[in-house]
Length: 300
Picture 1: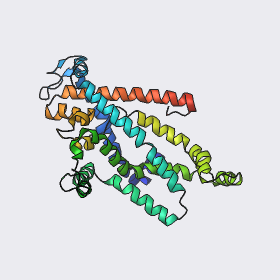
Picture 2: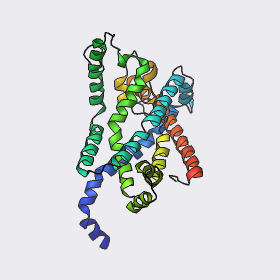
Picture 3: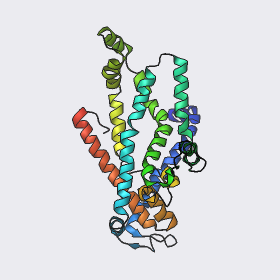
Picture 4: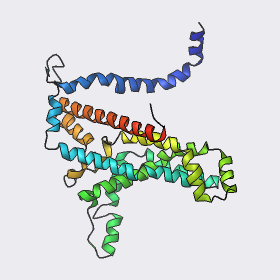
């Protein structure tokens, strides 16, 4: 009876979280039952009953395919460079923002910085296409004003990764910095006062107070980021991809889409996704083990 009264009292709260619960149940848990497609020569109209069980044949086909080495290299390098350059930027931004003493200016900067996060990949890529166009882009205008031939950035394989990473930093840096800003706000102000008394300047305070104060947050997010070294978002690589840069822009996510949705090879695409998930799980365990041994901080 008491439980029923409690649910009636909190019914609007549960109604608010219901869409989130349904989302995870349908797209995260119920969908896991279809992983078995990877072990079948699956036919959509026949279902599992009319499909042949092939074991690990789909995994073997993917590993032995001509595209395997290229796709793995592209995915790994894109995420590795993103880890090296994108991961530290929110930390640096949060530390710099924490040093601003004018609260109104600080709030304006923080708000402007995380607004790009809410822009879709389609909008971001459209902006890049306009800015980097060799005919009408403003960068092309700078090249022409200097008497140089404009570069077709989006069609040059060597520029794909820099464009992807720089645009990713711009879009996600402010939003990712929020968790570090929250961690910095939890540091005891007396520690800064003690550091000032000891003669520490602003840089020393950051190094000896701010960074140690958010060390656990950095390590935990780093461990989770390492798990994505073999994963990549689909939208931006797919939208930036064209026949000229496909040698470096073809990653696991785009290749899986082409195998499943374009070539309707659902078994192979599911096997690739499962392969990616297993590698990500192994990387998370490895990073977590190393973190626990070096810093006594771990996810589990």
